[in-house]
Image (cartoon, rainbow, N blue to C red; front, side):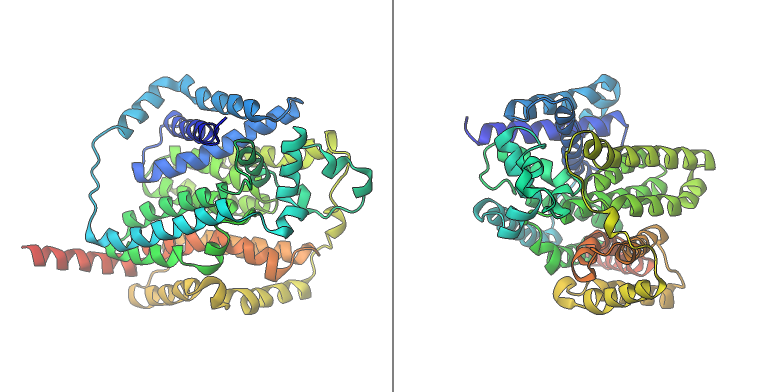
Length: 457
């Protein structure tokens, strides 16, 4: 079978699954947001269904992949009335027109997207990733048709495995899927996720700020060195950043737009974050708890409690499917995570916090001016407008730092310059959303619009 046919079938089914899910939830958002978001939602739901085949001892093959994708794509159509109304909105006449403000940002974005996609397609998986974790398990899964393969069952490997083959399964399952549809190295899903996140962020920034300001912020985001470097490597970090950051943004948008459907969509995205990195369950728990006063103020405490309960059950369920059920009922070996839990120590916590700033945050080679931009705009916004908001994105940035500091303190294997550095990927999209949403940049946007109006009058 030609590699293009199963690939486009898979992507098409995932996209339909995502779009139909948004429709079933009665989500109302611009197409420029819903189209990339739907692909990410579909990827998540498809990997969960595909993993369900493993739990049922159904061999993982191209046929299983496409059948599970078809089931996930068809299931939301049970709510056909909602889904059909959503589809009608997708087919309505476009209202956006290309302007000069968009030409340079889109040119930069397309060039970077081409480079990342070409690199993921052309270059093999790095030797470390090929031997240590995600791709190692994926290659054996494709060969043997099951995740319970020689990586975990070979007696010669008993006691020799690191924790990397046990990582949260989202990236590994996508690697299996893309290898099954014919890609030699499988990692093409990484730039697809990176592009979907960037596309969604572009639409959010344009909603918040003048197109000229939004374009500058978007270019700065796209060219953030560390995130750009991981846009074609088989790691969990970019996909985790996409789901976690979008989940947080959707909570803020639900409140700002008075649209509860976005809260339920945020649950799906935060579940995807827990499906992609293990420590996300802690960060999601802290973030959802801290968001409750905001949700209650916008809707009601009853709605906030319902949201918290649904988010908790769904996130813990997704987390437990892999880390509890699969580890204990299917795998013959266990990770050594418990042995690395060293408890909380105040001195180590201070060391982790200090090292995070000195060795990670202050390194412009990793983040360019992202954190400097955050600091300057935050201070400028407070001085000029006497406001710190928008508070919710700022709070989620704080949640990421706090959660990662606890992880770095309580787990001996968590290294600040590696684990926590990549964990901060989640913060970068939130930084640019916060900056665009500040009153300082809102005033600048209004000034630009007034200047434009004066020029054309």
